[in-house]
Length: 106
Length: 217
Image 1: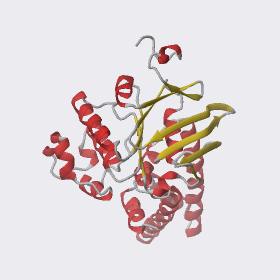
Image 2: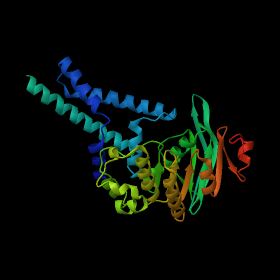
Image 3: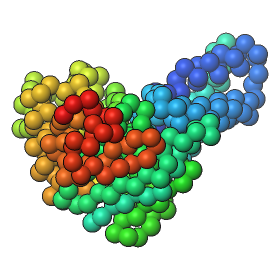
């Protein structure tokens, strides 16, 4: 597996930024501290996005999220791994931001 | 090398978008695909590329069935209708990823010499399109799928792109679709029309009138 290329995908992707901050904000408002909740929220979003992506693709309505996938698919990367790498990365970023903010607010 | 896609069935809400489609592409020949808006041209290219899974399809290369998505082989390149290059990657890095040279690119498209080390966000819509076409067309591979390559491109650049397509067809299977049908008719060795969910091999361009694709020729 060309790990360097998948890492490049993570480095340059911007798709999840809004959700990352929304997740952190939600957790802070609810004062939840459980990391598994971050993962659960991400997973729900991720599965929802997968369904959303399928619906939009079949309707031939393109969204930015899938457009950039063509770039990586043209390099021979598997889109399932792109999803997985994105998911793991987002959980890590959300967790990091959440615990950092919580540390400074406490 | 021969690429065949056969028995394509794509349904949405129990309604056929594509049904019984057959397309054949050969190395050294350009295959043009024409069709009205919503006839399934882009979906067909995505199916061949492996991005979109239809209800049924059979892809063969040199008579051998291919079951995995073709894009995983790294030998197929697809130009989508919309921008796909991430906005923040320096273009020289993008060219390196595709094993192409920025210097060679600017010898073909001299207007890009004004840029020193641009990112995609620095380019206009048409310029982005030119870069994407060049990457897809010129990078190493056996099969090229071009979805509306001439949209939003200045005529002078279309001429350069046509020259590059003719140059690359010697070593590649090229499938191309565009609403600028005159370019497609001039370029293509074979023409298929997608009409009423199925494909028809067009032997004489005048047939396009009979099928209701053109009013006059």
